[in-house]
Length: 205
Image 1 (cartoon, rainbow, N blue to C red):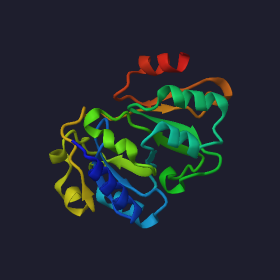
Image 2: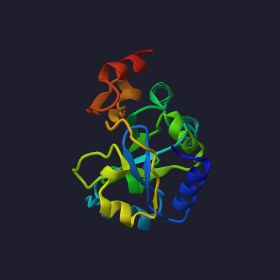
Image 3: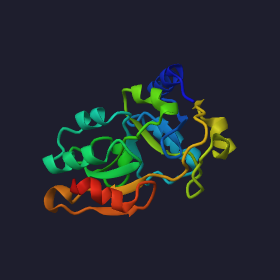
Image 4: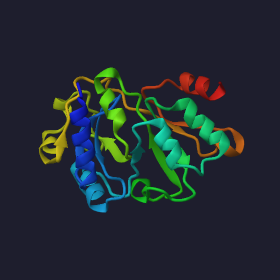
């Protein structure tokens, strides 16, 4: 279980350029300040991940995400509102090239994540600033359902480690909404915790 003090410590860690292991609504993740190049480099180093691979930007409340992306078109904004918070990562058009360190070789695409926090992790909803986040595993490795499943070298090197107990263990579904504004098309880029039928139902509502 995460306490308000844990959430405050997490926020401080991120604000000073640290890298944190933390529980999300799906699997354990790594987080850092999304515009801090040194922190992003360290996060990728811990994962042994190529620096040209994109990551997602996580907001801890849906309203904060929508406020940070005022350029989203009306249809895309409605789709985001229908799908988050939840166990999805949304690929969105990024014409203003926000959060470039998270975008990899395609600065016109932003991966957005807004978890649906269960009661045991609810204090994390109070985190006010976004983070660059990726799963807390070695690149290509198994996702971590428990803190013990996070590789020991990652836990040892992280600036903060939060234990949220056992998580569902299935990573987020990745939904590509980049063509949604123009012609109402979407694609499932990775199957995960939210079934494709549930994505379709939310978008058709």
